[in-house]
Image 1 (cartoon, rainbow over the protein chains, first blue to last red):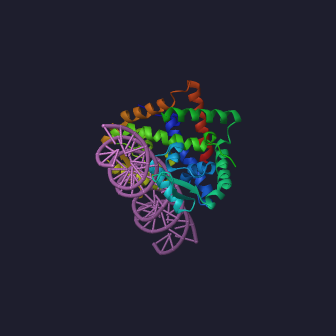
Image 2 (cartoon, rainbow over the protein chains, first blue to last red):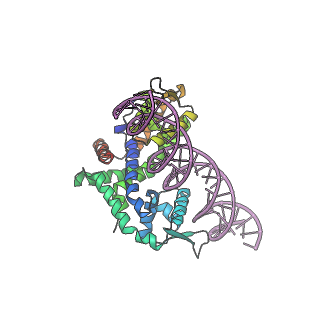
Image 3 (cartoon, chains in turn cyan, blue, yellow, brown):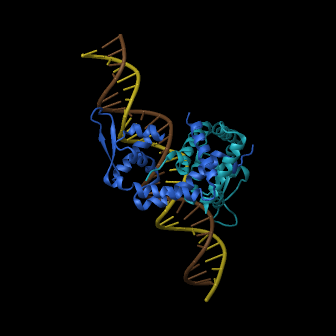
Length: 142
Length: 142
DNA sequence: TATCATTGCATAGCACGCTATTCAATGCCA
DNA sequence: TGGCATTGAATAGCGTGCTATGCAATGATA
C-alpha cells in the first residue's frame, strides 16, 4: 500500500497549516497576538459582545478549546468576559480598548502572509484555490 | 480594514487542517496511532532506520517536535531508537514489528479521509487543487 | 594536540487543539 | 411547584506544534 504525501490533500493541508502558522506567528507576535486568538478577534472586531457559545458555533472550534483560548486572551488584556444580564450561564466577550486598537495592524499582517503564500498564483488560480478549499470545508463539516 | 475568512487561504487552511485531523484521528485511534505520528510512520515504512535529523529534514518539522513525537512513539511501541555505530550523536529510528504491521490499515484510513474530503470534486479539480497546494508549500518553505 | 565551532539530540515551557467530565443556571412538564 | 432534561461554561488530561536552551559527540584548525 503506497501513499504519496505530495498528492494527499490531508498531508498537504497539515503541512500548509504549519507553514502559515509559523509566518503569522512571526508577524503578529510584536502586536502581542498569537495565531490561535486570531479567529476570535476577527469575529469580535466585526461584532463585539458575542457569547462564548456563539463564537464556538461561528468558528467551528470545540467549546473547551474556546474557553481556554478566551482565558489566555483575558489574561493578556485583549478581552473581558462579563456575565449576561438575562441568562446567568452566558459569558459575553468584550474587546478591551487594546484589543480593539489591534485590528488594523493585525489584519494587515494576515493579509501580507496570504499574499506571500499566493505570490506564485494568477488571479484565476487564486480564485479557484479558494473555491476548492471552501468546497472541502463544506464536505468535511458534515 | 475588513477581512473575509472564507476568502483567506490561511484561514481556510487552518480550518481544513482541523477538520482533517478530527477525521483521521477518529479513524486511526483504533489502530493505536495518532495524527502526529503519521508523517514519521510514512517515512519509516518507506525507509526504516532513518536518523532523527533525516526525519526532521524530510518532514519539515522542528527538531524538538520530532524528538517529542518519537518519544511518544517509542513509549507506545511503534519504534525503537538505537545509537548509530559510526556517530554516537546519531539516533537511528527503527520500526517495531507492530509498527511495520500497521502500514496497510493506516494508509487505507488516510486514503479514505482524503476521498471523503474530495468527494465533491471532479478528477481535474482534484488534480488542480493538489497542484496549487504544492505550489503554496513551495512558496512558504523558502 | 588543545581549542573552538558545528552537529545531533533532549528538555523546559508554552500555545492551542481535542475528548471527557463536572457544575450551575435555565427550561419544561407532570 | 418539584423533578428532570437541556444548555453554557470550566477544568483535567493529553497530543502536537513552536522557541529557547543545554549538552555531548564530532570535526576543523591553529
